[in-house]
Amino acid sequence: MPGQIERLCIERGLRMTGQRKLIARVLSEANDHPDAEEVYWRASKLDPKISIATVYRTLRIFENSGILQRLDFGGGRARFEGAESDHHDHLIDSSSGKVIEFQNARLEELQERIAHDLGYRLVGHRMELYGVPLQQDGAPKDTDSGGDDSAS
Amino acid sequence: MPGQIERLCIERGLRMTGQRKLIARVLSEANDHPDAEEVYWRASKLDPKISIATVYRTLRIFENSGILQRLDFGGGRARFEGAESDHHDHLIDSSSGKVIEFQNARLEELQERIAHDLGYRLVGHRMELYGVPLQQDGAPKDTDSGGDDSAS
DNA sequence: TTATATGCAAATCCTTTGCCGTCGA
DNA sequence: TCGACGGCAAAGGATTTGCATATAA
Image (cartoon, rainbow over all chains, first blue to last red; front, side, top):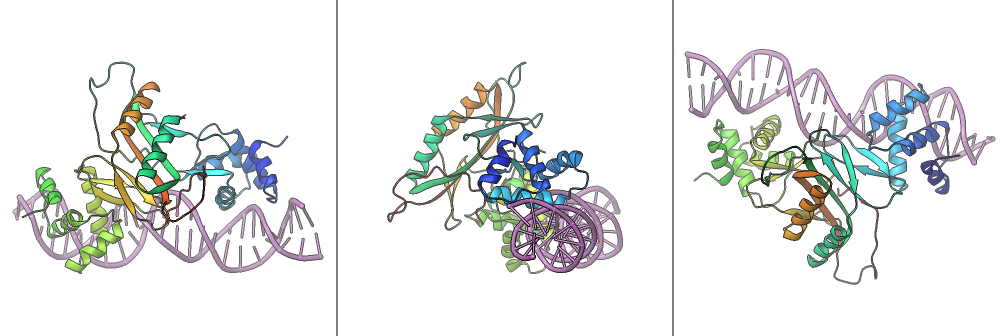
C-alpha cells in the first residue's frame, strides 16, 4: 500500500524507482517539516546506499510536480511538507523550534483583500508567526519586537 | 549631517569607520530592499576599494544591533531594510519582482490573536504576499494556487 | 596606543550538476 | 531495449572567517 506521496507520484506519471519510493515513504510518514539532510538521514536508515544528491534531486522533482511544498523558516535550509494537505500557515516556537500548523479563514480572506486593494491578484503567500509559550508568567505586556528572522 | 542609520550606529556605540559610514549612507538613501551585493555595488561607487566581506560583516553587525531588518523574499539572497521604520509587511509583484510595503492593523491584530489562541505570545512574524497586477483582464476568477516560493 | 576593522583569499554551507554506469517501464 | 535515474565528486552561489595590516577613539 503506497503512501499518499507515492500515490501522487504515480498519478503524475513519475518513474518510481526504489529511491523515490523510499523518499516518498519518508515524506508520507513525516509529521514534521524535515530539511533535505533530515530526509536523507531517514532514508539512509532504510537504504544506506542512497545518495544525498538523489534526495535533493527528488525533492526538487516532487516540488516541481506540486507534490511537495518548499518551506523556509530561516536558517538557510529549505524544509518540506506534503502539498496535498489543506492550506495552513505555521507558527514557530522560538524557544524550542517546534512548528505548529494552523488555519484561519479570516486571515486568508484578509490577505486576499489586502492584495486586491493594492491592485493585485494574490497568487501565493508566505506567513510565519514566531512566538514563545504563554503559560507561566512571561512578560506582562506586549513587545512589538522587530522581526526575528533566525530560528536555528 | 549623518543619516538615520549612522545616527543609530552612533547611539549604539558602534565604531564609525569610513566603510561603515558609507554603508550606513547607502542604506539610509535606499528606498528599496537591496541585497548584500547590491549594497556592495552602491558603496563601491563611492569607495571602489571597499570589500564585499566588509559589506557582509557590516550588514550582520547592523542587523544584530537592531538597526537593520533582514528580509527573505526567496531567491537565496538576504535583503535588508532599516528597522527603524514603522512596522509593515511586503507584497511582492511576482511578475516584476517589485516590492510594495503595506500596513494593516487588522492583520497585526489577527496574528496576535491567532498566536495567543495557540498558547503563544507573538514575538515576531514574517509575511509576504505574492501577487500579479490586476488591471487588464487576467484570469476571470480566482486561482487558489499552491504557494509559489520563487520570486527570482 | 591598542583594541577593533578591513582586505584578501580561502573556507563553509547548502544545493546543483556533469559524467557514466544502472535500472524501470 | 533505452531513455530516465542514481552515485560520486566536483562545481556553484551566497556568506563567513583566518590572518596580517590599517585605523578609530
